[in-house]
Image 1 (cartoon, one colour):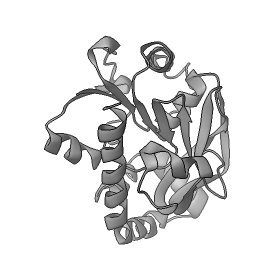
Image 2 (spheres, rainbow, N blue to C red):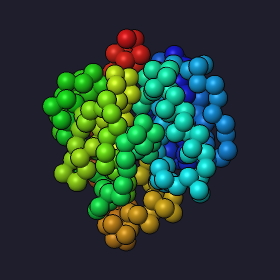
Image 3 (cartoon, one colour):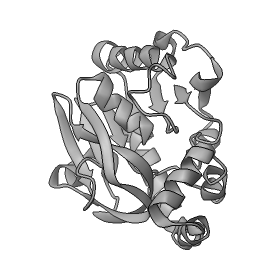
Image 4 (cartoon, rainbow, N blue to C red):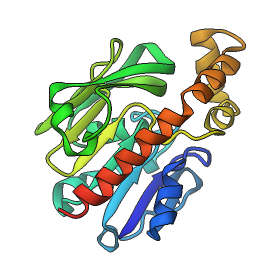
Length: 239
């Protein structure tokens, strides 16, 4: 299996999922689009993961590479029909690239919060064996308002209707972060845009409380990440 990863900032990488990939001996290549790295020929890869970032899907004037990224996602899902997994911005980009619509999340969802699988999500292959309700790290001020054609909502929260999405039968995305590991919150707290969103939503000093809460739930985060990863590799790539 050859995996292509789109990154948008250095600290938003596949996180804990890297350990599972490396343990399985899979070859994976991360392309940091924010640093000007070019998207390679898509035909050379078996799966595409798209990570989070501080930019928004509509920021094409400031980040013109978003145009090429959306085109690559459209081609990957619509033409090549290969497995896709998007997280946070990668979730929003999937919806936007395929004709859905994103808008502001009011209020922003930041912290360790509850996400629940929908009836469809409970039957979906990616979430097989995962809890119907789970604690997840959230850190977003944008949400998917309108899903694309041929898509299904797989998870929701009280504040955000589209927490997880499947388009067709090979593309999945999640607004929340399944890839969190021990240093994730501290690292993201160093990003000015993330720190500003955190403090404007929850107040000064909130980083300490979120890190404490994330540490408390870390074992559960890692169990869910490993199960979701294994479902993606064993049940989706093997189809």
